Length: 310
Image (tube, rainbow, N blue to C red; front, side, top):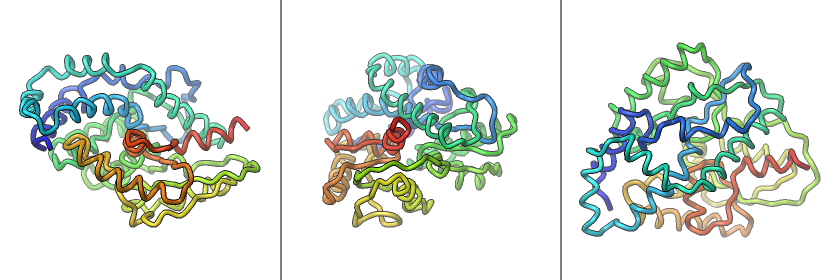
């Protein structure tokens, strides 16, 4: 296990200096919209929080962390916070495979297609789509998280944003529950799967739905994706630990201990594999971690997008 303080200070320093936990310029991270024909006007801002975009970089970074965990080299991580954020961020961007970036860009493009097909009134402005800072909240750096949250909230408020459509549980929880308490800014926050209005087609497909912690335990939204799938004729196998009692995929622990993340994720994968159906995730962190453990797992958006092509 790495010293939590070293990890937290590195991430916090990057976020303060670049508004990105990896120090990568957001213009390099957030490029999915360049290949999508997105509306410029609508009722709600599509707000990705950059979480899906971050997954390829997380996988690259944690791959190196896994190599050096519990070795003498792990001690040198404490010096990482002194490295220029942009320089280290550009290095991470260069060594992260382009095919992985394109794969997660397609996930967001699918979500935009789903919203369009559902006749949801949304628009997208990349300069307003910022990371929520939620990892710092998870790791206990309340001060850095609060400062960043105020910055994001001011940008949204100044732009006249009142409604947000989110795509992942971490960002949804931050904007819906934490931002009002910390910043005083109140937005109407709706996960994209609550906007789905896609005609059903005949199918005998069955899947196992993994409830991420924030949707299942804290936001009480577990039934919504299951109902959306059922409306499309896709049945969900029951998982013993689900809803308010769902178990973690292990992903949030990766930055501190890839080994611990693997152990936690392995237990969850065993639970999800028991029903014997392909696994569907609706969180980029869960998706990445379960795939890393060898799971046959798809993102909820890819299942929904298949219905658009039918």
